[in-house]
Amino acid sequence: MLTWQASFAGEDTRDDVNAAAFQPFVFYQLGGGTYLRSTGVMTYDFKTDDYAIPIGLGIGQVFQRENGVLNLFVEPQYTVASDGDGQPDWGIFAGVNFQF
Image (cartoon, rainbow, N blue to C red; front, side, top):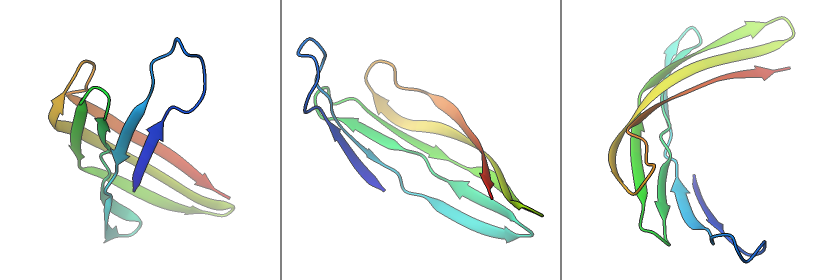
């Protein structure tokens, strides 16, 4: 997935935004509702040349319930390359998804 965010309105006193994000994602089914995942979001700021390139490896589990599906996952992510203030060294992406 590739997205681009740019300022087009708002208060003149605020900094303009011109950034892109690229999210390659890989899922590998292990069976029984268990899967491996990698979904790090790479970012680049066209105004400041700041960037971050994380990689992740996580695991998830899908549970079938009477009234829907429950999906749980956790994915530690490590930033292999970055430049700029406030860029993370690592993070943990986790989530719960309910489908009814």
